Image (cartoon, rainbow, N blue to C red):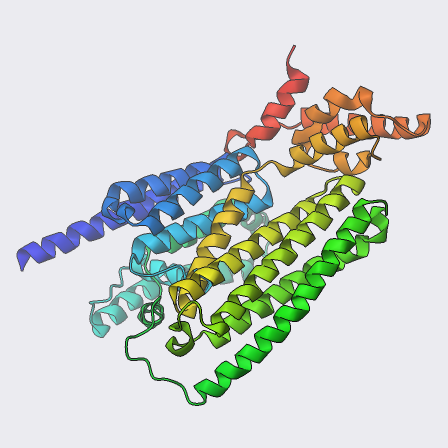
Length: 486
């Protein structure tokens, strides 16, 4: 009994030390600072803490992937510091903490788990700071709450209330009142509260057991004795007719799309088909969602999923997936031609990212059908695939790629250059624009003057970039050295 008590006390002491250390580290890194190197350092410290304290958890592939994603996103924040990289650094850290706390839990329902932890973990952290524990009796909890209420909450509340009243009765007291408020560092108070909240979310288990049980109940494989649904034969025959008609329609469209691309490539301008690219991507994503939904419906149970791979229903479903992959290829080709005519932009890069997500979704659907897995298996694979693609996307310097590509196309192929768009990108791209500025062809001296004026303004903005070390963005600091070096 004594050993159990000592062990519990030791674990609680270690938790308290880690919790308060993380809070103090958060306050030190983020008080009166923006987001940059500090978030990267905080992510590395948390990942290092988990590696030391929970090394056995790192044998799991899910924990290793989440750790790698945390490292990649942290480096991206330190280098770029964009809102996108900050978002994925936070998401990666949340998923890593989930995988550490709940090794048997999958990434399924990740967004629901994260939202619950955002609400519940700070509440659990507050009760922990107040000394409330799960194994305490109701009477002991009430006694502790009464002490906190009597000794802290009520005295502070009424003191502030009466001081607020008295300040209107005496000018000397009023000056002292506002002087005291001005002495208080409200930003520090907010940072402390935010640090407690963030640390609670990272260190405290706050996901209801029923949600975890639901996650485990939704297995990847079908049960051996799954009941066969009624009207299974009718449903299967309907699926044959549906997939046969859809495949025929999609095949005809795919052939026409190939001829359409060939027609554009042989002479028509991009303006002729720009509307098809803009409208086509959204409709393509919608059609792929419908395609996956149909397969999820017809292969939701073991009756159809356990059919041999040469079964006609499976053949038609697989053909339907491959035809959708063909549409992705034609849409990607149209976007490539559009880029070659109208240059590269972040939105056009976004089209390629959407297409890569669509390929990942259809590939996971094929794996589900071939391996005879459940719909829950498909969603788990989609979560990880989308997570990996978007994390890798965050570490690519798309703005610099756009600048280099567009200026090179302008110089080599006489493509019209939207220099105003290039100068609106992040200031870290300025050295690349400056290096090639003398090779840019302008339609008039007036246009060249506007370009020079805006370029000088952006240069000055970069030269004035002097952040504190905690919120520095290394890419901007490196770009600034281009103008400050002798």
